[in-house]
Image (cartoon, rainbow over all chains, first blue to last red):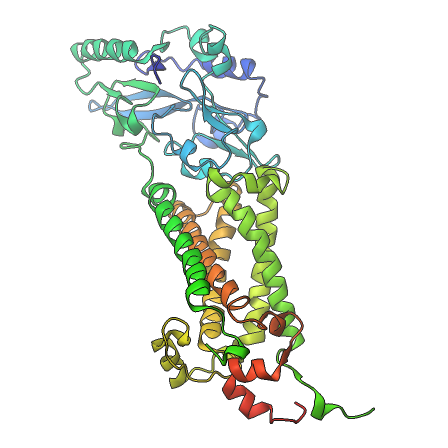
Length: 267
Length: 214
């Protein structure tokens, strides 16, 4: 990518969990609402309960017990993390369905989705979601259509708290480091950045008030799974060698040794 | 009806159940190979076009897999008795590579030769492995399986496909142009006595006395 990489900076320390981003996402992407599950039965104020084929972003709540005994909510917005080393791109068999677009974004065009579900099973962040009825996968595409037309992603546009900032990735990282220094000065010594180098560098980076292990569902060390490397990188030369070996054997055997025929008296 | 048995040159060497299960196996296998290759690598995505694009290829592969698995069960029963007859001649056969690679006299074969028995067990075992991993990959997006198990299914199915495909190339070669007259044994079952004596000498001597009807 010759051009500057773009990204989103999620400042979780500023997030209010107002979920304007969720609404804006649904509105722009024309996604229907989901049946509401009562917090009384689920024991959580999160809504909806999970990402789904029609919910591409949501704010995840973690109940964090402070040392003093108080309880604090940690809010973290989930969406496609836009990995540089994107597992989904590696495993998807259809290059029209999942590709990196001209802005460097990992885009899933569900119209071309084969329905194999490989990306849903191997994404280190469990972002793509499978629609069982349609047998297609859907995920957040960072509003690539808005970006291509000079707009910023709908979630960033809607955020009233400056918790979602859009821009060139290197500038966002610089901003993030400044903010983390400020947070440290305000009594959050564990404040840290998430996504600078994970998966080759994420397009969506988090400013975390606490260590990453405090945030539920946030993988400590996300990467292309070993099983995917085995499947998509290491086995490819084995496959080629095995195929050429078999074919080579057949050709050489036929030409050098020849068939076993009655008229030859055997071999 | 006149008795032509002394003049017959052809003998029937396979039964209908063996031929039927092998034919179902072969047809579903060919479907699996081309649909599977389309998913193996983006380089082979073109194979998917024959089935109407990759999206249409998924159910073809999945259901062809079910047919294949069914035919593996059929062939398991059809050929188990013969394939399980393993004796010291089979070891000798392996040690001289069946006489196919260097000048060596391979021991005469019974109804199945050692290579065929090997292919039988390979097919049954690989068929089960591919079936179990493939079933998991098919249903993983809509079923909650153990995550580690699902992850391991992808490379195992891929490696299994590689081995199965390579073995098939060699199997198809040995069963056709390398040994002319062999295809007939599994398509309609009629082979010449000369072919039978050459390819399955032990079985020929035991079951086909010269100039006698089978």
